[in-house]
Length: 107
Picture 1 (cartoon, rainbow, N blue to C red):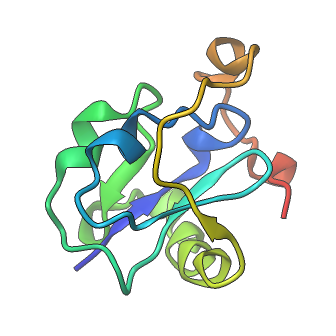
Picture 2 (cartoon, rainbow, N blue to C red; picture 1 turned 180 degrees about the vertical axis):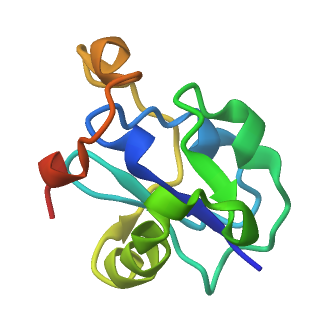
């Protein structure tokens, strides 16, 4: 099992999760993070650190978010690793609780 970043991360891109990841499995896109399923060791540390509550165990991903399992796998092959925490975008807090924003994900 791996962990999956879901829609709540879009336009927020908090990187608190990156700080606690012992294997550097996060990959960074323009306005979203993903987890490389081949690198994730299922440690669960990132889940509690995500201010947007966007990270789920693969088996616990909400039904409406299941497409993000494949999306994480796909984009983790294209995006570069992120290994250090960065400042969140200035408007991240405004986007944190917005629903239905998958269409805003930039590749």
